[in-house]
Length: 490
Image 1 (cartoon, one colour):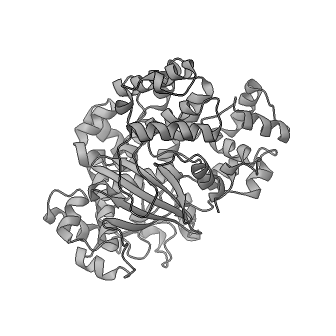
Image 2 (cartoon, rainbow, N blue to C red):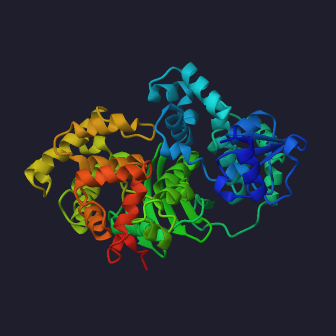
Image 3 (tube, helix red, strand yellow):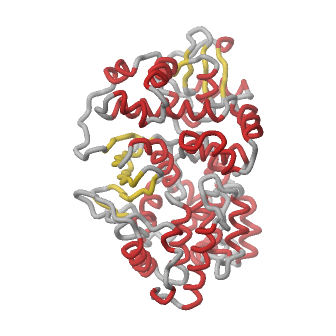
């Protein structure tokens, strides 16, 4: 979008928050860059420059606006709706792969040369992987400076900087303030009582309908791994440097997030997973505008706009849970998952809460005795086949996975039919166009609305909803107002 000057100017004049994260406005006279919704008086059009990323603006010598904090805007929805090389690279960079493994590690995960990745990112985003990772480190550093009382040296290394000097120089360059000045400017709120806990605000593009989002996560929560407590969805996170516990609660203009991490180097990756879990980088205006063009869906969208797709913090975990949930009730699936967690999950501490374990990895489940599972023999074979494929790397369901390759790999495993493959694609991989044509709830809702109810006919009709068919599924499921997945827990 940043190449369409007229469109960018209209968004800037309107102070339209829907475009925050789509592009950034740099002002050549002040050397400051802003988000489109920045409340300050706008500059003259001839003094504006438009960039596709905060990293590109920083690399061009602009510093972040202290008023609108453009580096903290919602991420571009493109990385959620696409599965090409650039989108996969951006998801991996957000997960901290460049900080942990460098650009060669990013290239190895994507199966491309470092030169090809550099070229693609520079062409589309105006910055290479190192610059993009540096911009993320700067944002992580600011979060730690403003929300914790940690010494600056600890913050520097927790944010991923190789030295305190690099930390100081980057913070000054990006924010035009020293780390100490940033802390002095921050509002002095109460510090969390839990050691290592951080309280954050996760932004999103309005509107957001929390009912099905948190209702689904709470209704299907695995005991010991997830829970709904005191108005917040809580769960454990398996992170590269150690375990974490997150509390997520809906607010009118943000998601309240409290993170308790064993190692603060996991902060940026934990935030990325929380945003992915709640689909916070979605563009609800684009989704709802398209779905409203179908007159049968329009009343559902108008009634509760801004529905998100409840996703997963770990795609491999969700794949295992999807198989456990085949042909059984939600309660039975939770019971089966809880038994696996108790027997094979890693224990975690959660003072004052009910979380006890991390969900077991595919490697931990690879030696599972099928006879110990209270499941039909065919489903036991399906589960063990999936776990073995994940543990051996024959099926890749990571953050940077190719969605088509993942579908093909899952579909080749015995016992994984179209419904299971598509629900994993929708909630595990985050494909916004995944569609559950064989789902009974979807078919019933379609029939009640006068839409085709057979899988083939419904799939053909759903072509008009592309590329947002996963969101259409949420609106169709929502017609069953009595189901727990559609209600915000009390």
